[in-house]
Length: 166
Image (cartoon, rainbow, N blue to C red; front, top):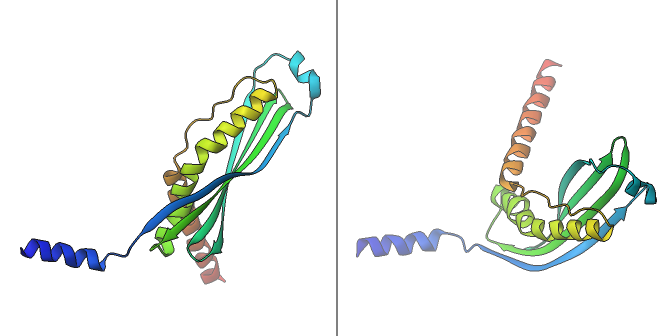
């Protein structure tokens, strides 16, 4: 009986956390083949470079837009065979989270949801450009977020040390 009362008390103290995807949409898509038809005369030994970025904007109370930008540059030797940039976005309702927890949800859970959609858009654009399919590997957004936090913390400590020296 006492356990049930303690459980009820713990539930009353816990904030009501709600996380819901409202909409996923393609915000921007760019595909370029700078070499034109010459690219198809070259031997296909691509060098693939992938850049990733996320941007978050508060739309209204508890509603956030998260945009995941993937930029893929494929080169043959020194020349760019093709460049594809996708901005996959989503609207997310997030209630009951603040500070670090909110930042983590917006920078890990939301991009994790958006990434498969962005990967599909990249693959479709590349194959429609008459290039071999390009399947991007999964990304660990939790590890990226942890790394970014650590880097920001180290930079903050470095700035404090510089100020102390002057």
